[in-house]
Image 1 (cartoon, rainbow, N blue to C red):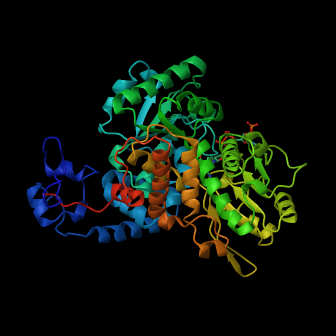
Image 2: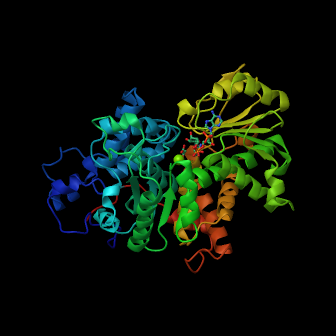
Image 3: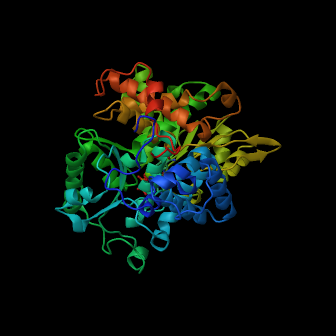
Length: 523
Ligand SMILES: NC(=O)C1=CN([C@@H]2O[C@H](COP(=O)(O)OP(=O)(O)OC[C@H]3O[C@@H](n4cnc5c(N)ncnc54)[C@H](OP(=O)(O)O)[C@@H]3O)[C@@H](O)[C@H]2O)C=CC1
Ligand SMILES: CC(=O)C(=O)O
Ligand SMILES: [Mg+2]
């Protein structure tokens, strides 16, 4: 930063203005002022008009809205990200409810499925079996040195779409753009990584446009060795406090990686832990409406995998914290298999299989409960256990409903019902910001509980009265700052925070750490 808040757009050697226009981190397009155009050799490389960022945003949104197909909007957004990063984030932040379904679920799922054919410029870092023995060197090819958060996948369980191999890269890229837009983590410190150990997806293996290794997935020792090398290299290159978010690994690797590295690295698994935290928050919020506390309810899960068992364990943990009962007693409230013997008050879908909550299931839940709480968490929309319309219609307007991918409000018998979006996107950006800003050294389950409570506290009385259990995404930056503060507060209490002294007002501190997409002035 210069004395008057101006910055120089490069820190390496100065090249011609053309390089600046093609550097997405510093490019401002038509918003370069006359002075900047003069000083940075841009005269003639741009048409004469000087536009404000607001006008550029208006134009970009206008163009985007002309595309009817969500995937076209996705491609346009990626193009913008690669052309003008600040404008991309300004769009995403200012129009979050409209654009989240584009850069995130459900459209990102389709983008991953078609990644080979829409692939243009590479995003993120690819580490494959071929890099064994030189992972550190590969990490050093990444242009940024100061990385604070990595989202990594091996592409084996991409949303509920299965094994998409190397094409899973869309997920870490999308998750990290939410880190920035929703959580305010600077884009330069974010690193999306896909580890390519092959794929068992026959369709991809036979596809001439497939961008990954054309071989079956490595398993056992071969897999573990590459992951071990990766985890060591990351710490060596970026230090002890690098945050690593595991994303969309298949069940068998997800749990073992988390268990292997949770005591040696700052890691968390978003599908197990982030999801648990957002769902627990939704429950805490819903019980203000339904009455009772966690331990008064009976939970039935369809799907006992990462998301299902992650949520179940966090519910049990919270019950032990609030009552005197043991974890074993708490677990008795939670059923992960069949519905024949029990009377659930809460039904949670984490199976990855669409349309499993049939009319009969929803009607049964409605006959057992005055207000059945139904969460259809599987993504993308095609895999949701039921739609919002089905939940409200089959329950005759009595259900409290939330889903992993967004649904529009539903009108049933003249009343408008607004479904919630129970997605870990509410948690991980603020959670990550909280860890980073206090210099956390490890993730502890109590930090997840703090995040849940932090999120639940953001739902207003007015929203509760309307049956809304999650606050609107349009307020996500404020929500993330509050989650970050709650997480950091708990980290200080547990002795896990290394930043000293502890900032007095953690919400203000979180806000002051947050990235803004507004253009700087260049001297
Ligand atoms: N809303 C959100 O924030 C999140 C949503 N999700 C979504 O949740 C889904 C599952 O993810 P995850 O838990 O990681 O996946 P896992 O593979 O770990 O778990 C899926 C579970 O569902 C079970 N299952 C599969 N088919 C059926 C069926 N027909 N009936 C009953 N159970 C079934 C599986 O059992 P078996 O092994 O026997 O097949 C397994 O226990 C995905 O669609 C994902 O997108 C995940 C994370 C966050
Ligand atoms: C939301 C998410 O993380 C998933 O569906 O996997
Ligand atoms: Mg996921």
